[in-house]
Length: 325
Image (cartoon, rainbow, N blue to C red):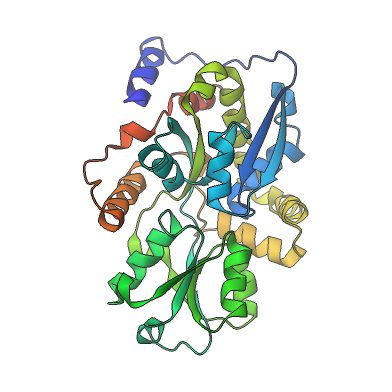
């Protein structure tokens, strides 16, 4: 709803390109999970794309989605980039006026198990490792297991956090049988001999995992900053997507994530390669978001009437991309 009404005026006017309004540095603190799904953020900061639009941007890594949601709701960070199901949870559960303003990725998620787990039957009576038990990738994991006949009542939950904490969950306790991981943890897990039982994308189809979300009142009061931020992200993503910039992109990712160069290279390939999980130009995947809402309705219950427009305002993204060549 917000996207249609906001963008139609520009369409009628011939789509006026956005001109960045630079009024001196405006500081933004962006909260993310460490991973290559946010490589455009690292590139934009490293290549000065924020600075040229009058933004001073710092990156903060969160240990858990709850910590991220709390930081956004309390105004300690201005922008969160993570699984957008967290934004839906903030609206529905915490009654916070949050809006999703861009896409990001399909999550690049794969199901890993401990080496002694040989079948889905072996997961019964054990535990699966998640971040938060009632949002985002936990719901994806429950659905993937349900499709194989393993019911939610047949296993316990172990709360980890970001991907390294989740990986440690199956490393450190044989009672923890399965976990969904994304890069760079998928690379590490495979090297350590944890079996990869396939991707969430193959199991569930289109799914809008990552995206950027903010408090609505902050967005309204800081429109220029938000549009300039999104424009910088799209420009950085286009730069990183060019084959000639792949090696430098991997070096930037290695620096921010503090991983070995070869792990960064594989992670960037998983994000930007032929089967990469990043959304082109950080464009929002509406079909994937509808699937997300349906999955939440099936898993949490009582939310079957959720409408995508309730959680979105893509007008800021529309403004951003009209200003790029």
